[in-house]
Image (tube, rainbow, N blue to C red; front, side, top):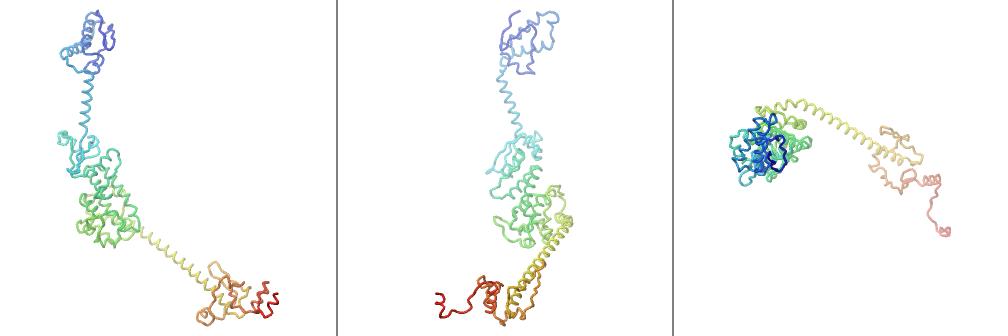
Length: 468
């Protein structure tokens, strides 16, 4: 038995080694070099003939595979090495991966952009792409390219971001605003057959328009929808599409009857007016005519819930019948809203009446106070410190125990008596009555009672001597 050669690994041939088949395991080339592999095959042949009994017998299939492997190496001296096989495997994998990528060319020549998207991702989220790429013999599948020349790259980028990350982020176009760009993204979702993208855009628009639509003080000045947006919707959507119904209901809820009856005003940064939309599109015309007489409660409920717009839309229903059915279905809610408005009006009137009563009570209190002053001025004996004060009751009315004055209150303003002097803190006495009109005798009595000495006579000639 000849000594076996040594390769990368050391083999013991006391028993036949388990040689893997090159067809099933390409890693067999990593264990031996090409020259050593031929020698080992010859050694395996010699040792297999020298063995006796059951140890020398081998499976016929193993012999055929081993001898076949040796013949392959002898007949093909240019068999690739392990590194070459790895390179070939990498190229095959790259080729297979490239076959799964589709190039999407968006826009016309001046703004054209290309997007490389996985075929499976496109076919999962877009029925339009699935129809184009499902057939391997279609021009798009053979060229691995899809052209969308009638779409803006910024709009398709929103679709690409959505299918990759699940987030709909809209880049505002230069010649548009937020609502107009979102409308174009919704139209893009409809063209590509991505219903989930349309629902996301519809939710965003609904959330942006809802606060002003639900406000009872909204008018055309706070509406973010422009006539150009209505033109986009009427041009690219079906008559009863959810987006068109959402925008029309938002206009109805924002605009008052006076706003809808005066559609000729110009809108800033807009090429068209509402009157142009009214004359051009019949469904917009029907919407204005049916809702121009809406009350405030009906306009409040014209803006439906989000689920009402997300549900399936019957494209065969004419727009005038649609709004008639909508008005009938809203009749119950409108009646409830009108009842709430009536209750609010009743409470408001009640509060106003209470306010008037309180104001009248305050005026009555002031008039009685003036009557008390008139009593003090009209009495010859004057108004003393022991004059009874009025008793104020809980219902803002009061009674005075003193007798009523001889002269009426109107006589004070008719010139029959002297006008009421200005009562400040300097000329008010103990009783709260101006001291200028109190007789001198009463002043002396009052001073004596209060313990305050007052000079009643003018100074005499000997006053200086008296002071000295």
